[in-house]
Length: 444
Image (cartoon, rainbow, N blue to C red):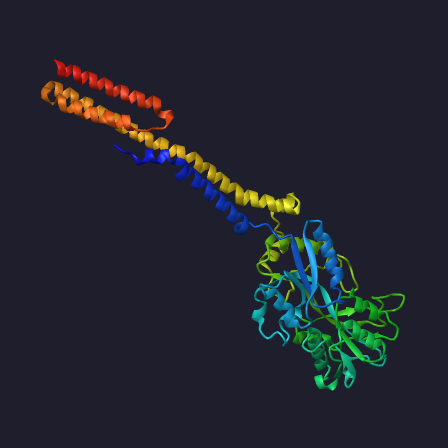
């Protein structure tokens, strides 16, 4: 009897062991690249423009992330609102995250909300008030800007669209003011100081260089927003706040009176496919670097997860609920990622591979036992037939002897693993004993 199991055993390395090892290598590669990939070591964050306060914030992120082995790069985007979001939706663009105001998703220049579908907010990371500066002390409200020379960034920018929104609330139409072309915030501030402009709109944090310069320059005044609550009711992404008298500079009494301002939330947006561990690293960094108190920010007010104008990342939502991977709580950042890959990706594959390699000899053992049991069973039936032949049909002894000879040839031809040699010899001994007995009976 030719048993294919024995043939397979002779070629077990080529047909079983090596394929199992090759599959293990393939699955480990897939685990490393797709199932549990390590987070990237570099991160590129985009900001709308220089001098809006993003550079100091990004620098704090950079320092915190560098201690965790992550390199951060800051790049400035076009001031047009649509292009800032478009960079994150472009798979060819290297930008991974961006600082963006909540108004970007709803201003007319971004006509399709679908553009932000692939964008997710990690958190609100601060306030960006709409500052209005003038060099005319007699101008105390936006309605007095009719006919004045006004700078609010390039046409189509978020600052320009916001300025138009505020002016319309003050019954000032777009054509009622003289717009100062494409001037950015810092050049516009310089032109205001030189008397070449009457007012400048700036959307920036209270720590931005342009605000720090204009708010402390003699002859430059800040204008509040009348009926701010009414405007916020019409546009919920603009929120009212009060800047107390002297909050910027107590000795210099800046501002000279309480001012009602409108602000838009500053978001940290990421691509939807950003690595979860990298998202958590940014959230941890936000928790560490955003806790300082400012004239418009309470201690530990940010990051905020409840007031985002963009869809919140599922990982940020879990973070807000207190979820932290247990390995990231026990180990440093990169060790935690390696441990996650090893524990959940590589180790199960190695365990399954080890079990498969142990199971292969077991498979042959079961099959060999079955083969040997088959011949022992045949021998038992033959011995039973031998007893009947002796009693009733002595002439049939020749047929039994032929059966024994055929069985002996089959057993002799078996190529069993070496560890079964003793059982093979025992089986052949039993066959030889049965043959001797038949020969003796036949010789009578």
